[in-house]
Image (cartoon, rainbow, N blue to C red; front, side):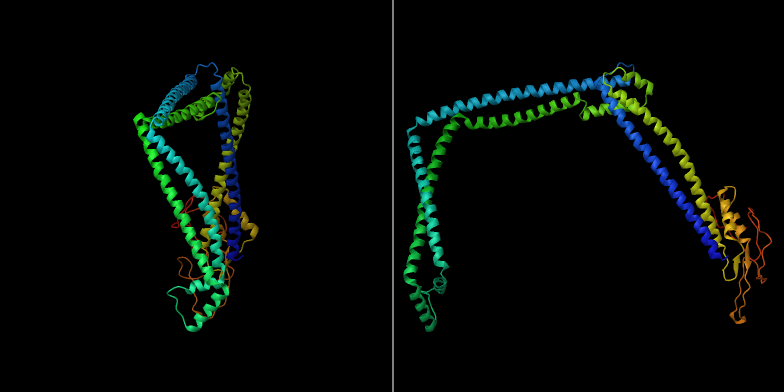
Length: 467
């Protein structure tokens, strides 16, 4: 059997144990994950039971449990007080807002009475109404003229001949061109009646400008009278201090809106806590769940019997079942760990055999191994016994190495020296005398110097020792 075949058989055994090891590690990981999932489910059940205990506190002598129940009662009282406080503040600022609005309404009536008694303001107000009505009429006329004149002017620009003459500057003082072009332009102008159309265009443009001018004047007059009216009204408002009341109204509305939001949140927190919900309730329930995990099942049974709810009784039965499942999986996990460690150790021992054999292998052109595949696998199976060293297995394999007689020309100058011997064995099919196992730290085989590793059943090794 050639050396490469020996290496191939050892490599196959390594791959075989690698698959076994991967499978064992995967099974170990799956079991560990099952335990984690069951423990998470267990924690959830403890939290549900704790929530029931907080809402229906059973009689107990556990100071920690009683302290958390008291803490929940204090939370209830705090949330109720907070809700009542914000409710009271909301009512207070609703009264302030009503009072401020009443003052504003009263002063607004007084403002109207003062303005009605002012003849200058009444005259100004009449002018304002007239200007407003006039502006509205002018705006309608302006919009209508804009629409009509724009449509008619667009028709002039859509005529290609007319647009061409306008672009050429025909009829203008700056119009220039060769006599032939001027004659052609004049012929086109007569053809489309340019002079009459050009006159009409100018009239439309002037009407459009006039309409814009009238509208701008009406608008300017309206804005002037409006500012005078507003100034007069502002003077009366300042005299009555209405602006200060308006600012006060805005501030009260903002504060009232803030207290209303806080009141709604306080009510929601109180309602959620009373129903066993909310962050604060869950925080206390989680603390109680941690304490309950330290209690025995019998203690929990005694507490659940005191509650009116039957949900905690069902949850406790489920909890007991989960504990049994977790215990079984933990025992199985321990065995799986031992199996994985053993497989890993065996896998490393096979790797050591492959490494030592490959390092000490002699060129296959001159040697081969007088051993069958079944015998070789038998030797490798002995690695399953931790008392057998990988070096011993390699030594036993090399003990089956034989020399192959090959003829070489004298001109090749080929010579091979094995180990520390100064001469090369030349006998054909000559086998070493030692064919059994040897676990000593130093030995030799005929025709080979063998360096290996020191190891204790598959652990780490150094390449400084030799047989």
